Image (cartoon, rainbow, N blue to C red):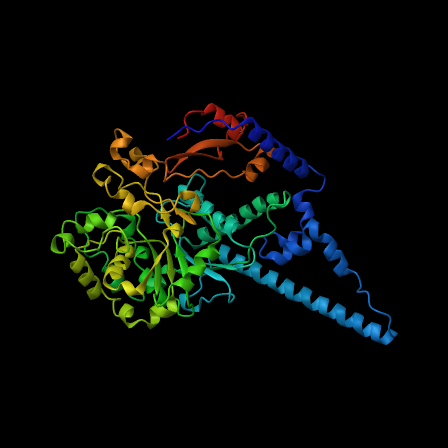
Length: 521
């Protein structure tokens, strides 16, 4: 790749001006916490900002004044005043009740309080229900500890959802976890909300944003889903090579997705996403709108943008059926379960789907296609999509643009682009940072990169550098918080330095960039 050059002088001046503006506004006698009433921290919904932020405070003072009424009799005037005050008091009580309800929900979340899957409901008619699995697989660690990569990436994913979401549509997060992880999950969500809020408040002072969308949470024990049909879930494991080492997909929660419809019986549909390797670049409402395109299909999934299933089929199924489309680039290349739309109501009503939820059907699929399941229920969905394509809607690739270059190697040079290419990266809706990359050597393909790379890779088609102003850096600069260069997913990025060395000289991103000039790829 071409090396990144130093920023032009004009850009330095522009960024310097923005920093000066924010620092100046932050150094006033009345700080952000003093200007914003305490009752809207944490912030859940637009009503708080519309009434309490400084730019709208004049509206609040008008409401507090007695209403101006046309000339009339004193008794009529008194009645009208009384009615208006009563209405205002009623609205105040209703708003207070709503805030108390949110506080209760947040308290339950922090305490790790579970809701039965069968009792989970959509909080409002227009809410977007978003499911994810967050479980601490390491029995000896806490994923909230600083330095934990899972924690950092999960926080970044959730923040990208909030930042890109419109501020009107409620978001309902349904988190499947276990008893040991539930409180960790609750605290992490609390941190994400508060950290995003602080970031957004900084943007408010620069007229970038106004508020966050209303947010709801439900914690569900994933064992409740597994226990509905353990024989089915375990059938994914029985066909594995006995000499194969245990992987993350050996855990039960990677095999429960086909049972969601039978577990969440009061839900009609929801979106399910990976919990830590997605970057949202658009409003999740755009993804929700894809439900309207599904027609009679019951599940919407994007294609697996790799020849993963090609390699699983070419030595068995393809030899029996050389002209098959199964596993070839296109509609039948296989699914990726990083982003899935589940029409739960249709799934419950489908006799074809329901009849496949047993171990015998799993074994039949495996023997038909010669697939040894090794990535959990994604393999089952893929094989079901081959056998019953009408059950599945192919989600446009821009909603699950995978970046892994694991299969970009010399032997796949002629066909890798046919599987992997989607739209240009700057046009994607959701980036899925799965697997390895962004260089061939990051995936173990050593030597000359051109020996492994494909034409689209060499043209820079799979790379997209998105620059955004770091508002939290300004807050960190004022509080003498250090920043450092860190390698994440093969890319060098600037992050908070959590080290205890307080005597080290404070450095900005620009100092670090100058020191590391030529090291960025």
